[in-house]
Length: 114
Image 1 (cartoon, rainbow, N blue to C red):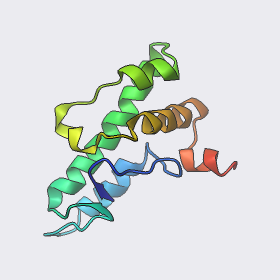
Image 2: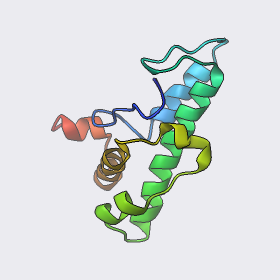
Image 3: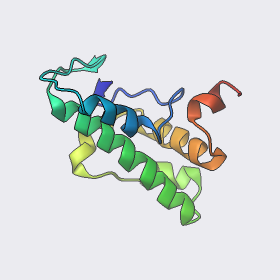
């Protein structure tokens, strides 16, 4: 869990990430103490899930429009509501989402060569 632009997606399942966060959102919580970024409340969970949803759906839409990965990395914009999660690793996160969607398997499996 991260609060801010600290998500490492190379060994992730980007498409499933919001579901995992959704399970945490069902718990009664008051504070979220992320592994990266400042502590917060339930807004950290919502922001994290929304960032991953927007990342995945934005890349998927661009692939459907026939765009190549370099074009997507250069031009994909997410909404202001998730700007806290967009940072220096964004182009790599787009690359990881592109590979995950193109190869139809979690990026963590691609990385591991499975």
